[in-house]
Image (cartoon, rainbow, N blue to C red; front, side):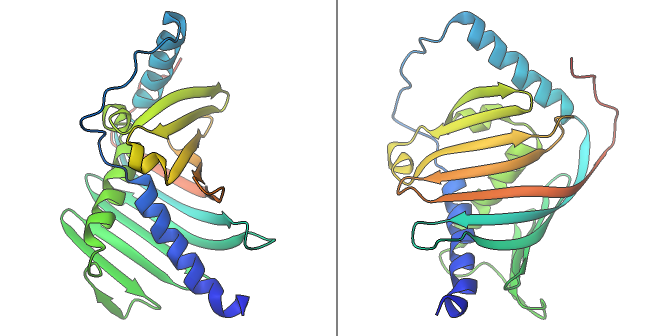
Length: 225
């Protein structure tokens, strides 16, 4: 039974992840005034500035990823593997290769999805176009280190300096009911994300680890102190 359900379950969890990481701007709500000391706010600003400078001039990223979905229904995590590619300014490719092959690509406003070998392709499935577009915006925000965009949707805290680790919680109350929090870990050289953890409101957890990553840039970046 589990073997029959595994591909479908992993596919659903990937789409759920795409939905969860794309959260609406928390319109009509005001953030409570921060009681963090000025030194903590200053430290956060310095860390985010380091990340922005480390991402300057990036034109291409290619990486494999390993995705593990931890759910209370199964003793072992559901595991899938795939590949991700970004080409500036707005081309993305995301494909799960195992256990069931399917993927999506975005070129500007054009969205293509496929299953299997890719011989049968099409546009976004009915009702999925907005979610895919949001997913694309989220990926682009992280690639570009657009923390203004990110902080419109999340409360962001620097949890660790080595490696740089960010903890995020949704600002939108409805989204917070589905996504408890998000943990993002960067590589030592800061130019790309190494691990993303999504903690769902119900206790399940999705971990995406990026490996064999290659980064190209058009201009040398400023050194990150």
